[in-house]
Image (cartoon, rainbow, N blue to C red):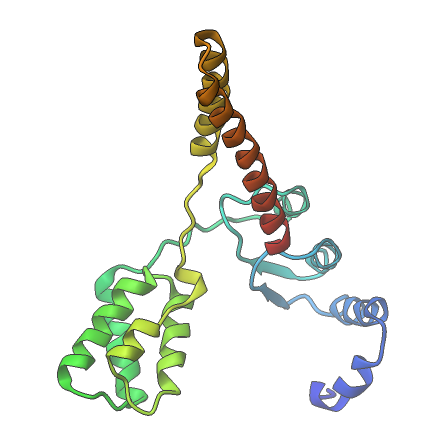
Length: 216
């Protein structure tokens, strides 16, 4: 068997299509390969690659339950089993952090800071394993953990986003109703306010959609 480190340089010079053909040819001779993908939130070309790989090996991948994009839906039927992964409970997260600290000793300014560090890890991670590990890795590069370090410990995996769609719908309906009410009552100031608010609303909505498309 040829080690991958010996062929990595040659593979890196090959087009992606040729690399995929080589991988698929190798998988056809194997029936015990399990491929783990970090997430299904990938570009269309990568989604097509995952679809091809799923035909030749056991594919395991993570996805957001709220994701309903078409290219992901086309992949879901290839998965025979779906497992709902819930965040870790606080005691399990605390035990994880304590065991990690035993293996990776970190300097703390005081014992009080150490206790605050464990509490911050449990609270700010939200029980998300990726967030716990990410923040532990951040703390590992610090010479000494202080209160400033605790305030700076964050991870994107623990960030929760609030769906503002209902609020935006109510705001748009309210501005439109305000225009008609002000016109019926002959209140020009209110009509100008409603018109300006409607224009500002559409501008904000446009930039929000642009930012969402950029994140994808």
